[in-house]
Image 1 (cartoon, one colour):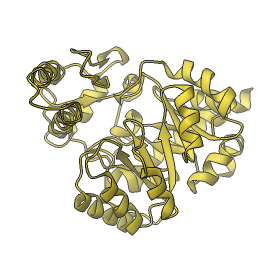
Image 2: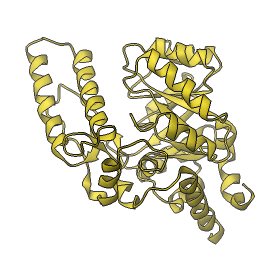
Image 3: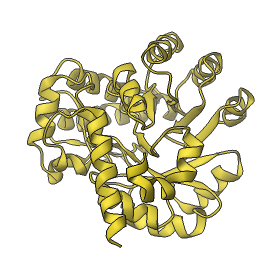
Image 4: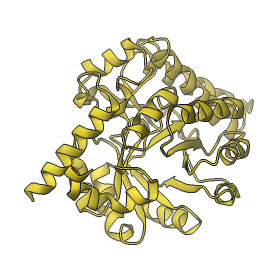
Length: 336
């Protein structure tokens, strides 16, 4: 990567940590971040991450094996902390000697970080506040992703630019920190590297890569969309703390509001407890996403997208996306 010398030098800690050529991670997007896209990103020098989502341990086992058949480069696995079979999924990661496990969607349950460390895996965590970030890094997190509300899928309430200013000056010197949310060009990567980040994570920019198995109609919806079309879902009931989700507006977003009302009613009648209620919401998303990504139902399915969707204009190979981002980043740093 000689022609990206400045960028690579500033990403060095991230590159060493991930074991790849550029510290650009692909965000884990359910149904999209699977064997084809993950291996393509890793083969192109980035770091692909399998989105386990609602997969069973058997499905994850197959997915990892199929990804390994397509790349000998490092890649990670993203596990949702509220998955009822979390420890079985960790065991599958152990079986395959997965080098990096990303824990997303809440505070990792007791013993989960230790279980990953036991087989030599590195743990990447998310944190919406500085206090929680410090706590997770103290209790075994090897690296942190700070992800702002511009991102697609599940989001927090604060913008990436604010989180970066808050977290990086405090954490970046001693910890590996990646920045995510709303990144669509290399100039933004350059500025986060200058603030102390070791690398970045992008999802939306890769969702329409040539190697992404997303349905052609799903990709077309992305090409048509502007930043403002990627809207955050509304929380219907404060007792049902549903993490907001950013997706392109369609009938599916309206259906989600109806689903929340339905689940809140079950909570009222004590037909479900809080964990079960949240799982039902998660399962709704998994199904809605599948309809959009796999079946191409862009009306009723969930078109999860970040606000950088306005910068996604055409299908490009993963290698081309990474090369372009690095060129833009290098040019920006060279101008300084």
